[in-house]
Image (cartoon, rainbow, N blue to C red; front, side):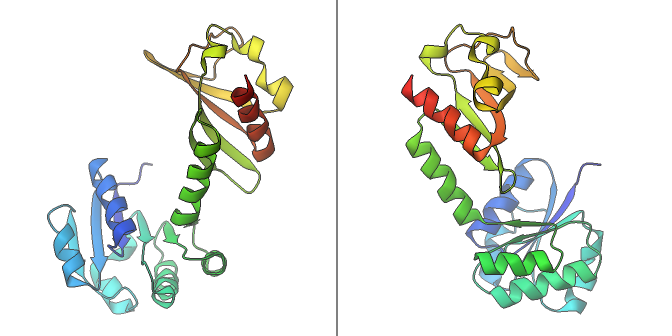
Length: 221
């Protein structure tokens, strides 16, 4: 079942950007922050925005936080407040709790608390930018786990007109093309006979090493 109601706790740069994007997706978003000025800035953007201290259990109960499909702890610089908020959200039975980690240690603590998903915005963005600088064909890069990656690669001119069978990334590199984004639509689970055209976008899944080998091959051709 698709999540519809989100609570974003912490309306700094990351929290406000995330909350705005959720609104743009047509979802209901409650914004919470201790800073009245931050709340005022987002009041006209979000479904609701309130000034509140998320480390106070009674405050969260009065908001009805456990009724939200997902609560995102986006507190920017107060690790103690982040951890306390995450503990309360889990104890109160919020269906899904996502939290921003400020460091690896902070992230490990959040994981131990049972947070459903820990995100590292600065680290992840740094990884993406680094990969994009090294490989101009790389459009996006998402680490699914410690070992597996999903990447979007632009088809270079040298592969124009080639079929997936000719490219054969699974046999050569161990990674798989799971989709091809073309001008006229997306091909999900493409077959060996599907033809690549310059500037198509291949969605590839594999281990980090497999993706890197495939990227290097594209750069070298």
